Image (cartoon, rainbow, N blue to C red; front, side, top):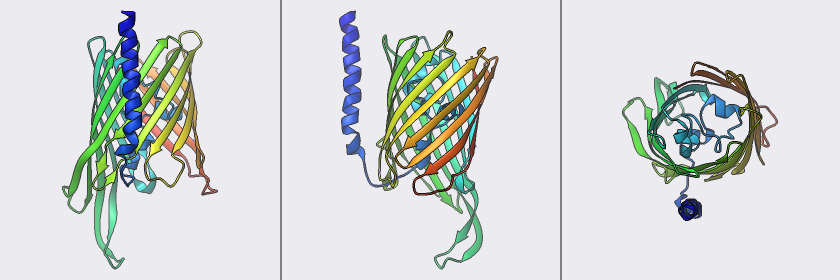
Length: 312
């Protein structure tokens, strides 16, 4: 049994190392579907995006599919976020446990802008208006082994822009793979590779490589401290590596307060948030209170995140 356990661990580590080695080969020019890099869910955003080693709810379909087995029955999440240029980002995910060690999940992410003015080749306003709509649909699978979990997601992207809503393009959005281990009740660590092989037209979706640790302290796991390091492989104008740190403190299993930060050589952001859980129905709120880039002396402004989840 001990030898089998060692073989499983070595195989999982070797598999992830192989993916890390070949990830740069998947790179092509472009920076498609930039909204995929931002993450989802007010709880994880309130932690500054340091969620790779936590991943215990339906948003694990995006952050780390190896976290899916934490859902033993059913978990459902909805969120909506206003973004720049009058766009909105919507997210829905549902995760269902299949037995004791296996879970599957489905997620839908949408970014859209309505009522855009049409401008012709002479830079003249035509009077027509159109919409932009981008969707990411993913099917996820996670399985718990004796010492760690493994997970994977397959994603399809659909983009539509123009006066004809059906005039769009559907493409392969890439594969996500992840590993998550909880060797004790007070510590966990995880690794996730996202958007492997994703393309939109002639442009690739940047690959995200993230690893993190989380410490669960105080009696009853009332406090969590997490740290992630994420590296992005793509054609970028800013530093591709960022550090994310977050903390969550729970009060009587009903109320939680959170804080987090993201920092790279070119950009810094600060997040705060809270959550209320009543009978399995959970409302989460997060605020990006500060975001500054080295190329700009101005604060990018506040962004509000709201999620509604239900699990049983």
